[in-house]
Amino acid sequence: MYLKIKIEWRLLNYVHQLDKLINRDNCTKIIYNCLILKEIITPKKRMADWETDVNRELDIDDWLDDFKTIYKCTTSTKLRNFDYRFRIRDVLTNTRLYKMGISSTEQCYLCGDKESIIHLYWECEYNKRLWERLKNIISNANLQIPNKSECMLGRDEESTVEDIVYLLCTITKKFIHDGKCNKLKPNINRLISNIISVKDSEEKLARKKGKDKYRDFLKNWGKINLI
Ligand SMILES: [Zn+2]
Image (cartoon, rainbow, N blue to C red; front, top):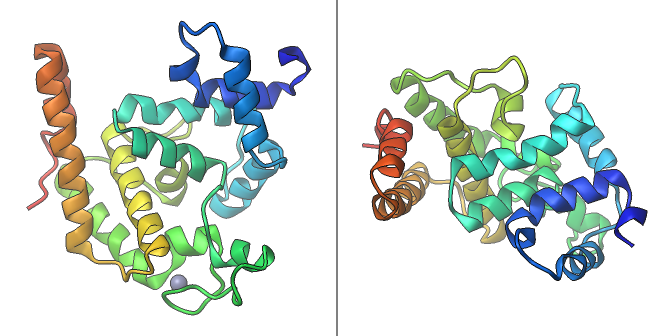
């Protein structure tokens, strides 16, 4: 059965379910359950939509490989799951809800423009303030400031954006997502609190895991000043 699944689906599920599949003898069941839960649009369509949104040509193998990036950046299951859903564009926007007949409008809940993914997560004037603050934090840490494509999907082959920067971008996107779900106006102080909360969790876990992990934590987070 597994071999009959399209190669891109196999890769996608493999990446997403990596943690669950290791050392498990019921991996066929896990893959099957995952497949029936997912929508039937192929990842290629989603990749093409990203190409339009971020003006970047994506190679399918590289794109699928990038799903692993977040696993290097954080131990947070919530952020890992969100990153996966964001990459396959499985996030709620009024454009999508309108098509589904759930929302009566396609308008952005913040500004009134059409609420597409790229509008809500990047172009919306309200959420732009969050990105500006984040860029400020990254710049103060003397790290490379990510561009639109890197904020949305992480680094491309020529980029030197560090994992910690992509993690900060993912926290920001998750913050925008939570704001949308709860119909909240973006607030920079709440974003900073969220980042501090992730940092504290990573630090706690790193201390538990020993010296090497704690050194890695300091290397990643040491330059980031959130005051
Ligand atoms: Zn807007």
